[in-house]
Amino acid sequence: MLENVTVVDHPLVAHKITMLRDASTDSASFRSLCQEVTLLTAYEALRHLPTELVPVRTPVAETQSPMLSGLAPAVVGILRAGLVMVEAILTLLPHGRVGHLGLYRDPETHKAIQYYKKLPDQIDQREVLLVDPMLATGGSAVQALDILKAEGATDVRMLAIIGCPEGIAALHHRHPEVHITLAALDDRLNEQAYIVPGLGDAGDRIYGTK
Ligand code: PRP
Ligand code: URA
Image (cartoon, rainbow, N blue to C red; front, side):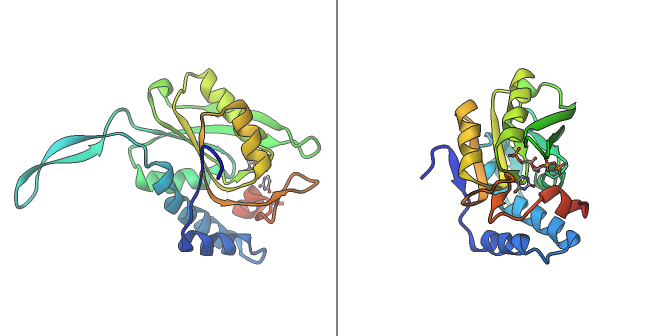
């Protein structure tokens, strides 16, 4: 069992991951499946959100019942592929604030290169959920966390659809306190730094590019 990592164990998630892996799944289905898996796994990734009791009048009685407390959480997507996950999480957290970090992997070095940053205000006082479907070498996630911490974020968790041991090790080497929630933990990286068995290039499959 890996420390600070949750791999969601649920037959619905496993079923949808298999459909995502299938190379014959088209872009429209792939996008929907990414969103469905995000919804199912966000349930785990957001389990820690703080609540407070508030008074509420039901049709039957007055009672005290929990609601989310504090500033609205921030959902930060790593472009491009993280965008579909952000949209899914906003259906659960409509009051969430959204941040975007533009990062792409250099095809030769596989190192993450930043090209965009836009984050919600008061990020230092918000619960932050960083989302990206793939945690491969971990380079993109590590750089995203470096940026978030430089902006003052202190409470950041990561939600990815597929991870691998190399990506988890890289992320936790630099940011050991960051909890990672995954829908699947795969075997390894190949020579091109793709996750095996994985699902290929998430951004290209979501947007139909190559
Ligand atoms: C993919 C994926 C992650 C990154 C993971 O993005 O969405 O951001 O690779 O790889 P890493 O863990 O080795 O950094 P990509 O760089 O292909 O950009 P894209 O989403 O714009 O296609
Ligand atoms: N990025 C992807 O989209 N897929 C991988 O397998 C690795 C990095």
